[in-house]
Length: 223
Length: 169
Image (tube, rainbow over all chains, first blue to last red; front, side):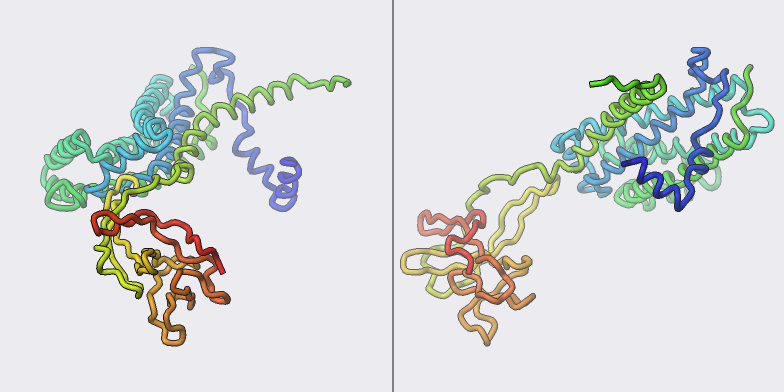
């Protein structure tokens, strides 16, 4: 049945070559943990992506209940966590996944660094990876404010004050982040927009570039 | 039954798909259950009885009374405005919900000159007789709901709207 549907589509759109191009490629022996167990370090990038997928899925569901508003934000988080079935698990996935994605990304960066994989001709992909790193940190920073509890409020206050210490343009950056005179309603709304629209959009674009480049250039050789 | 040979490749494929499916389900099922939760939660229950008016203000003519009920809408607790058309039939008090059974607009008593002494819904010209029974060949298919009511110390208390016992036309 599935085969017939696939064949029907394939006959018209010729999708098999596309599929081959994406998924069907050699994995060199030196990056395959089945050959050398120590090659598990080459899995960190894929694991980072896997957790990113979980983050995107879980946030889609969390936004079914969450509202980015100073009156209701905390109450809606409290409600979705305590009153909705599996709320504690879905929010837990996003909460712990947020930390884990930074950890995995850091391990992936260390692997790339210590295997020298960033060297010619892969410098550009290192740069794209660094951009992904900063986008991820931005996602962590903006997402941290959204529950609108004391931790969130004061962590963001400190973050904004740090940004304000930048010479000359610090005040401008502060206002750009808070969206108003104080850290309040306008800050929460724009942090939400940045967290669920702007940065994920940038992240998906950069991830696409990251993957296209690695497929084009291939995995770097053994040590 | 003759045994069909399963190749090593097929067996491994099945194992991989099974394990992968199990892991994916472990991720997706909590999220899906989380999303459908409002549809699975039952109604809140009977609800409280709210004082609306004193009994001696009621007449044979339906009068509109506005009142407020506490509603809990997820994390948002508020007082929602409600109305009832209340009249007396002999000793019996009847409190009708103004919500049209066609598509949920609000009905008024005796506002359409062509159909005097009837409840009128202006959205699609639905009509109901005084007891709430829907007039045949107008859009509504069911009679107006009646409020659960009780009288205590000369005051009328209304509860939740319930299906009208007069039955549909």
